[in-house]
Amino acid sequence: MRKTYDSQYSFGDVDIRKVKTNPKSRDEIDKAVEGLKFIYTTDEIRKEVFSLLEREIQPNVSKKTGRRGMDLWKILVLGVMKQTCSCDYDQLHHKANNNLMIRQLLGHPREEWGEYIYEYQTIVDNITLLMPELIDKVNEIVVNTGHKLLGGKKKEELRASIDSFVVETDIHFPSDISLLNDCIRKSISLTKKLSEQLGKPGWRQSTYLIKSFKTDLRKVQKVKHSGKSATEEKKKAAHKELIKRACEFFDKVKASLSNLRKDAMFGLMHEIIAGEIETFINKGEKQIELITRRVLNEEVIPHQEKIFSVFEEYTRWISKGKAGVFVEFGLPVSIIKDQHGFILDYEIMEQSNDVDVAVPLTTRAKDKYPAIKSFSMDKGYWSPVNRKIMGEIVEMPVMPKKGRPNKAEQAEEGSETFKKLRRQHSSVESSINGLDHTGLDKCYDHGITGFKRCIALSILSRNIHTLGKLIREKQEKQKKRKRYQKAA
Image (tube, rainbow, N blue to C red; front, side, top):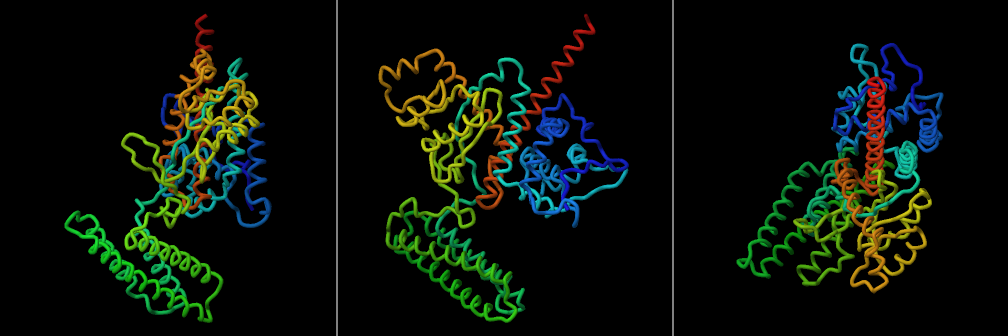
């Protein structure tokens, strides 16, 4: 049984409509609470959002019978607050149980009437129900709500800016031998876990084995970084010894896994762990192949064959030429924002670059928000085909050309409208900086689905923050108007 929200208040419960924020506070939580409270208290928006949550989150689960699950409103609030506060699940667990304003927004009783304590795993299991596609739909509702609040000419036309930035994944600096060490460590620890579940001996010294391989790895690193004192023969010999030890460990794991599969108690759950072990063995053998080719055979490994993480396999090596930043490990993301600060759409570039996503991203944004009159972007998005198509999508595409423009392009880029929109383009950097403060400086979620969820939730949190800021400004204007009327 899972309710959207509990409409029946108990003695001591907090009415979400009456949750108060500090109007002078500059903290992200206060503005996010204002935005979430507006969604909850506006009947039309609340029905639209809640019907979407009911339709998308476990639609086959009974609303009347069974064990009570977390309310859909609470899932949305906790998901938004995780990114608003730029925290991991451990910090969110603490805030959900101790932050008074968040607990009031969740509708819990005050301390004097008892406490409802959230469990860590309950929070994780429920937030992961929010799929990126669902979050994008909620985000569209929030943006449209913000546009409706704007008065007069402000909502008649939108001026959009596009830029990209890198969202880093939580990995260490990848080298062939360090990735091989990851494979050894995981294959041994998982084999030990499986053996203990089946009551089989043989891995009592697993911790020692992992440490011993790490010691061998340090010896190789020392030889690699010893400069001229180490000859190529010494470096190759050290790598050969490390490969030999790795092969011995993998052979031991394979033999143990083969014996465990013969056990009568070996079941489906055990097979899942065995599948993980085999995955890490295969990845480890791939690293051995790359080390052999690169160090022993002195080959140059093509970039597309390189691996940057055995856990977050989608990670890319990105070097954008930033000052002081040689390389970033993650995925680039392109965002579109309007002049009011709302992020209209985004694109995660798993295998593509800026020039590849310019047309599909702007076309999708134009379909969602027909009021867009101009797109401004930097030279990375330009190509002759993109420029031609962009001229058909919007009235004023601001796309500076790579290289030297011809006379017609010089005349276009020299127009006052082009210059004005080009000067305003830098405002997109403030949205990127805001996203960095809502959890996108580094993504700590696992897997490509977790990565996409993290980005979608951050963009939703940023837009709710912008909505709350807009509501606060309107409230301040109303207060000033009342003061002037009283003075008059």
